[in-house]
Amino acid sequence: MNKHAKIFVAGHRGMVGSALCRRLRERGFENLLTRTRSELDLLDARAVNAFLTAERPDYIFIAAAKVGGIHANNQFRADFIYENLMVEANVIHGAHRAGVQRLMLLGSSCIYPRDCPQPIREEYLLSGPLEPTNEPYAIAKIAGIKLCESYNVQYGRQYICTMPTNLYGPNDNYDLATSHVMPAMIRKAHEARERGDAELVVWGSGTPRREFLYVDDLADACVHLMEAGYDGPLLNVGMGADVSIRELAETVMDVVGFKGRIRFDSSKPDGTPRKLLDVSRLAALGWRARVGLGQGIRMAYRSAPFVAQQLPAQPPALPALLRVLSAGRAAGAAVAATTP
Ligand code: GFB
Image (cartoon, rainbow, N blue to C red; front, side, top):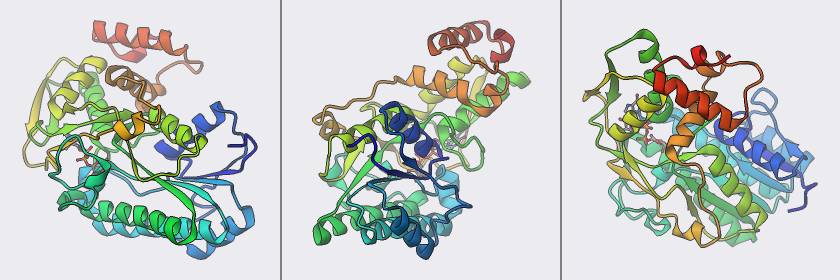
């Protein structure tokens, strides 16, 4: 990849898109092309075509998507399938029409069958029924994969697809009604500690298992693949290890310093029992995740809006921050109270 290459990051304000921009800049790519939703509506095929034909980027990363946790996926089923199908169709077809040769579509581990063997290998795609709570979203993402494969076969494009496991990190969604479990746990534990609550409510039974990847690790993998010129089939991106939702809640409570007990709310769905990706295909290409779960949760907690606002304007370097956070945890004190 030429360092002057023009790179369009669709969805640059989201958690994944902003991490991709950070990583691309770190790697010396400065010619990044971005558009906010009000500048370019990715649901509008005509506008997307006009934009891509005028700009003709060398590379495209599709990080734009309608995403959410188990409740949002289940509740806003029409929005999830419609918006994701349209964004993928518009950007992928528009890219082809504009002569863009290289593109990466970001998907999700929920594209795989609900009850497939673990860890999940890429070839299990379309081998069984999907998890009902996120079927519309998964169908849209599978359609995106098939769009890429079809343009590659019919027109010789190099449109690749990466399927990350559950992600977390800076710019995550902390709205408790629509978020994923990680930001929900961080916010709930923080607020429970601030209020002095006796318990923290965890949806479902706590037994489902999930794999969590810090979003900067995902961005590193994506840029690594683009730079390496990867143009093979679908690739999983994960840590290669998972935890139960109960273990996740306990780890988050430990980081945040909440000492109460957990109460499970069985009126909420569990979703897929387990989603652990087999990452051997990616490992064979020379990439592995670097941020461990405890370290990642500390960094995510530090960047959460309700914590970041309480910290000094000039944050200390990361190692110092981690010391501050663990000191706060040991004392059971608010992060704000332990920082100068
Ligand atoms: O992260 P999450 O919403 O999505 O939930 P999925 C993971 C697990 O955490 C489920 C439990 O078993 C939830 O019941 N959980 C416990 C909670 N407490 C909470 C809470 O307060 N909030 C939330 N949100 N969950 C999504 C898919 O599935 O994952 C998407 O719906 C996508 O399509 C995404 O694939 C990565 O991992 O179940």
